[in-house]
Amino acid sequence: MSHRDMVVIGASAGGIEALQQIARALPRALPATVFVTVHFPEQASSALPRILARAGALAATHAVDGEIIERARIYVAPPDFHLVLAPEVIHLGRGPTEHRNRPAIDPMFRSAALAFGRRVIGVVLTGTLDDGTSGLAAIKRCGGLAVVQDPADAEFSSMPQSAIDHVAVDRIVPIQLLGPTLVNLVAEPLSELPASIARGLPN
Image 1 (cartoon, rainbow, N blue to C red):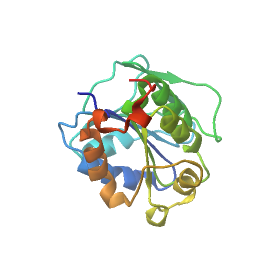
Image 2: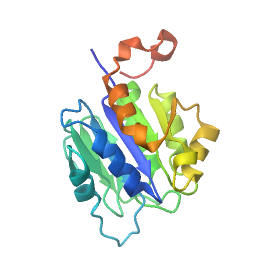
Image 3: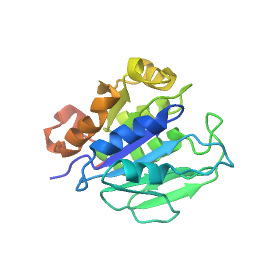
């Protein structure tokens, strides 16, 4: 029985601590793959994979272009590359910046929606401005779930609030409950979705 096994998470300012809290709650045998995009300056180095691997049980690495997707791993977009998903494969690209950032959240969200449809859970965390909003809308259009950190709980509320204002989100969750919420959503069979949602959408 299929289930939601592709979790895409976007964050900006304040996102490192939020991501650590999520990583702590994810079990080693998580039957899903987690993809993370956080805004980093173009020339910056990123220790985020090492931080997340230390925080929780899942292996975490920077994504590599052409890499085959594996379960129970966290893939992080490296600085200056958009992380784009295709069926079974990760791609990295230096396309135009979006929201003045590369990596940006929306390209990852949009590609996940097109590649995996109902299997996607999109998550918008703390950050400024509105990156992630249009990508989260694409995930919803393709039958996936939209989860947003509670703006009242976020260090920077603009990104989650924008998502709430423009997308029919499925869950608004404080950060301390977000990891357990994702574990529960991953375990939920897709067959339990209402037929009106499931009909005509990608598998």
